Length: 206
Image (cartoon, helix red, strand yellow):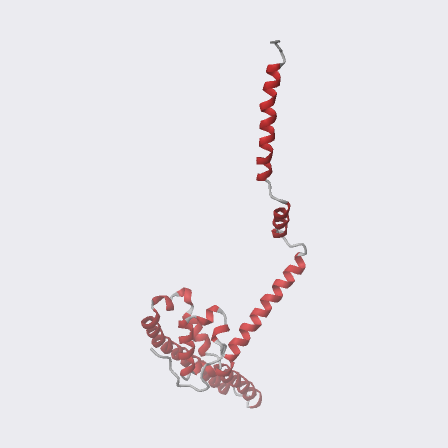
């Protein structure tokens, strides 16, 4: 038997080559197939749109379309398509309560306008300041009556809201008071959302 000094080196190289061949399939398995690469590439979307102006314009158009639909729903009295704030149960109750009663503030704007016009005409024609002062006092007296009427309305309405929906319905965050008085001083035909009943007297259920 002849001694070969290079035999150990050949034997040492064989396991390394076999290990390299065995490792190759494992690495191949860890990589996605070409079809998977295509699917992943198709699913990637840029975070920033290519055309920002067109994207912003489209977003504004969608928002405008939504607002128009909500405004139309308020004109028709369609509760299901109104803004979320108008669909709150205590706001529906406030609207029904205000619409059911006769509110002095409902006629304040036309009455105040008529008094101002009459005051100017009387001052120019009669040239008597006392007549103008009396008419202005009448207007301020009517304003005080409106404030008292709104206060009495809110006093009763607030108790009903607390009994039916709890303290949260009349908290500062709910803005129920401002919602009630602003509706009470609007003329019935101009109110939005539109009153659910054509005439007064339909009180909400307690």
